[in-house]
Image (cartoon, rainbow, N blue to C red; front, side, top):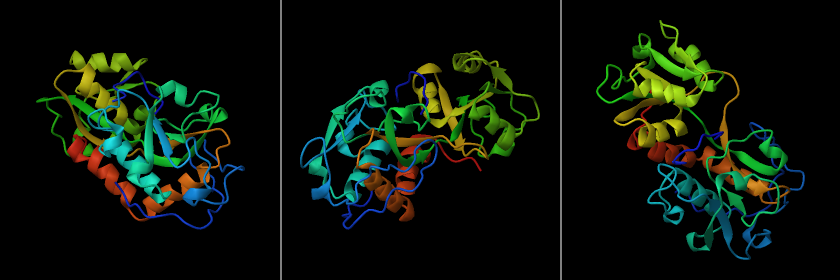
Length: 288
């Protein structure tokens, strides 16, 4: 995520043997790694620590991405995704080691002490100059946030939001999503800064706000008391923001991780993990 300061806030364990094809061009800024390894069997991988897959994330590690501030427990969206990818790369749970790396440090230039980092890092051209990214493992959705008990707090579909006064930040994918998907009868209140959007909801100047889902978790957890995520929805058209695994520039592991992500998408495991940890159970039902 190209994220503000925030509380940021198991798939199959099948062995990937045989040769990996070179990585196809990925979404967003990530592209095929010309230095990718031609073999993805575990004993042929070049690792930060021999025999272990070292995965990094920030601390505290917040929900719903991780649970109980413990990435190693396999609970939470990104912990589950990390173990699913590790399993597809041939690693058992006890062969995964976690390390702490601050969010900004993960994609800063320089040598990395991890094999990959998973921490809601959006794939961007600027970041891709310093690190390599995997294919996207999560396409960021938009979310509607309202105050509990308010008129639109229990809305189950986008059509019911047409008469809502909606707050949104200028120049964001959220604003475009409001125009494309909700198409409100009243012009939305557009603010220059995200904090102004949050304050508008807090001060009841708007009925609801639209932000990306990771930000919505932060708003409801830390910024607006007694607020709730009404629901989430996908944007239409335009560039899709995606989270990617972060690798040291030139890492031979990128193509192997890409292959693992492809398998998890194809067999439905990635979708199941998303539904379990970022869906209704996490307080973010899909708006039809």
